[in-house]
Amino acid sequence: MIAATTLCGRISPAPLGSELDRRFLEQMRDETDASLMGSGTLRQADPEMRGTGGNLQQRLRAFITCSGDIPLEGKKVFARGPAPLVFTALERRQDLLQRLAGRGEVVALPAGPGGLSLAAAIAEFERRGARSVLIEGGAILNYSALQQRVVDELMVTLTPKLSGDAQAASLVAGPAALGSPLLSLALLSCRPQPSGEIFVHYQVCYEEENA
Image (cartoon, rainbow, N blue to C red; front, side):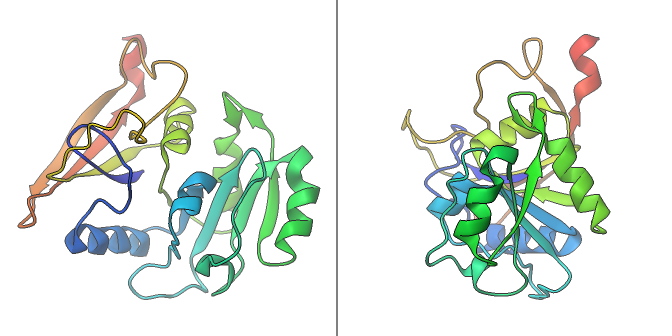
């Protein structure tokens, strides 16, 4: 999972990071085989998720939507390169197929804890040859991925910015605590940048919940 946040933990309005952070994101896309993003994040931005080399023939790009409400017009990801995957609920599949009209490949997912099964989405990536997946937000997808324990590592760019807006999206947002009461992280690296940002890399420690 990757994200840029303010010091008060907000991830919107995006983009928050500097050009250094943008290059780091593209490098992580280079080092992974697929990206998964929530439909809300797509509504707010125009990502292509292609990496620095721009090799769209090799990289899997995917979005997930429970409601089937995914923006299409003016989004480069539906106009350039292979059609992205769109994960949705079984009952939304037919409607999305009609709306996408070949601009995306619809994959129905079973229900999981608090939403769609992200383990099933990861299995679909694996079936298509992906060995690593970059989860790119937003807050609801991040929460679900951590709740369903499909995240091994978390990379956060701490930006030298404050929000203070209680309505701005946070790094994770869900109905209940992720741990008992907190989900623990183990620091793997911490790299201050000339931009004033700090690139922080954590391992997620699910086993400590029941320790």
